[in-house]
Length: 356
Ligand SMILES: NC(=O)C1=CN([C@@H]2O[C@H](COP(=O)(O)OP(=O)(O)OC[C@H]3O[C@@H](n4cnc5c(N)ncnc54)[C@H](OP(=O)(O)O)[C@@H]3O)[C@@H](O)[C@H]2O)C=CC1
Ligand SMILES: O=C(O)CCC[C@H](O)\C=C/C=C/C=C/C(=O)C/C=C\CCCCCO
Image (cartoon, rainbow, N blue to C red; front, side, top):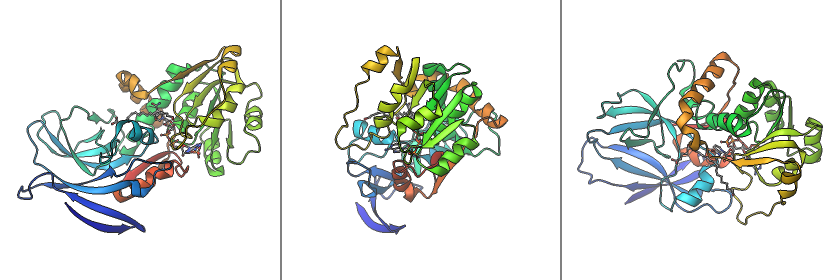
């Protein structure tokens, strides 16, 4: 195993070289990848991850060699790393990748696909988990949008709002982390659906952005004197649908402002992912019973059997200008840890993307 250090942006990145094949192989591609060196304890640290290089073997029949062009960093990676990964594993994740070489008749070199290759610059696939970009993808639309508004986060907003919340015109929708990849799509689809939309987010710039994309009300949860008052001021009659991305204290307050027969979509709990000790919240049974609420969690992959129709709808809204997107792009594969950690500091406005 060869190792060295490579300074980058002041970070010491330990480069570990692992030869998975004898150096004698010719034509091998050197891939970089981010491995989970140490399980996260609280907020992830760059030193919890290590940059490794591996030599990829030559392709077998049916295989494809892909190179990542854009990579996604998402909050789910934090809880999933704890649940699904062991130390040394390559971080899970998705990317828009270009097919460099194909020994698979279903795919031609040069094609761009959405893949689940993890945090890697290059990887080999058998083609089973590759998704072509939706047909009719405009040349002018950045392919990275397939990781955000017209990708998994957009699908999350689409199915969460239309199938779990089942919004109706004239209703009032509340969404937190509203300027993020999922939240910004939730608010805009709700507007398209004829709802009043209230969003909370963590900076004044993001509040201004929310208003620019059509939110009726938006506030900075970090600076309001009282969350309870801010929610009441934004919608004195309360909320029909609460699309919860954040969990924690926000949810404990918001539930008491739901209207009768309101619906709460539990999409995520990003405020809780870095807890070293599980937080104890309020009991929710009282408002659930006396307001006759429905509270339902979901994982977007459960709806992937319908992703084609949803992606088509999302792309159409983007092309028509009804669905605006914003990307927070970090340049450089070596900066993936920083981009990921930035999610938990609210550094991103819109979808966080790493451009290789
Ligand atoms: N159920 C599912 O299938 C899916 C669920 N999700 C969930 O949706 C949520 C949003 O994900 P996504 O849109 O990708 O991420 P975002 O693009 O919204 O980025 C995360 C945002 O969360 C906010 N945030 C971070 N830490 C905290 C905190 N401690 N308290 C309050 N807000 C915080 C920040 O925005 P701010 O400025 O507002 O603080 C930050 O920008 C997450 O909970 C994620 O797990 C996402 C995809 C699929
Ligand atoms: O290769 C993989 O499997 C990763 C690909 C994931 C894929 O892009 C799609 C789905 C992502 C789902 C995200 C879900 C969430 O963000 C919700 C996450 C966790 C909720 C746990 C809450 C724990 C609170 O303590």
